[in-house]
Image (tube, rainbow, N blue to C red; front, side, top):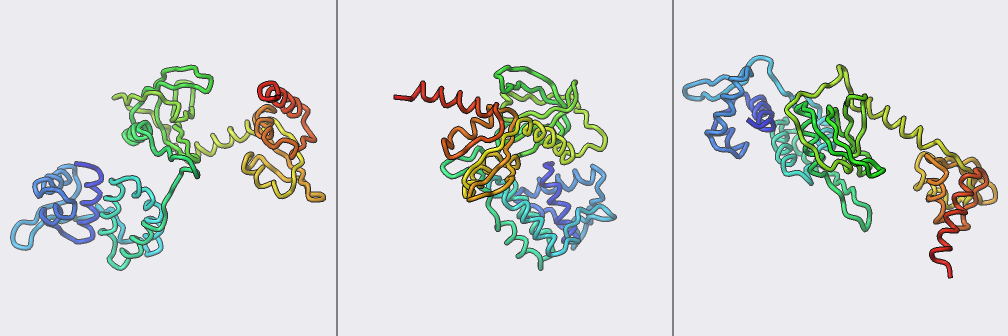
Length: 313
């Protein structure tokens, strides 16, 4: 049986005490025969779900096997649905699952949970841009993570070099509008940009997952390493104080105001190389002045000469 139906069956049986196959079929929008097979499959799998024959019978969940939403407070239920709700806008499966979860809540909480689920819409596309959405590769990798299966990736590096490798998928992270795969490999833990995966094949081999692995902690390490590289080159620039927010939008957390004098802000910026700093600043023209970093000044002059040679009259 499908995992989402398994959860829904358990939740409904818990909230109602007992259900008949016909009631279950109506709630889950399946046939009575399918509902009966689901109940029998649960019982065969060791879940204490037992039929009660006779008038007023049905199926009961006994003992301590509980997937409990009734223990949530009203605030906790709203927080849960506020978190999950936006995904329902782009996934019919999530929308169906939310409906089933709402039915499993105590009746007094349902209105608040439904309101929370519809309170937020996520639109990842910038103005004038199309949203990238979740690619099919993300879906395949997510399935491999859940089922703990090794995957064979055809991956293209930034340099354009292509390689094929078999890795243990540990988790997926969406940062901004870019998806990353954290995976174990023969040379240690690696992070892959999903949009550079040309092909992914799920193998039948079980993936190795380190004991105690937590994706959030592993991602913190990745972020720290990347941020460390981002600060390899530093420059100090002077810009009008009113434009600091624009500069900060370009450099993010690698932008620090050192001081403001006479409406001009002295700002320290950093990036992996002088060229990358210069590329960010080139569009500013004479508005920005680099007061510290000979390397950045050299790169700006070179970029300016190239532009004049190509476009100058």
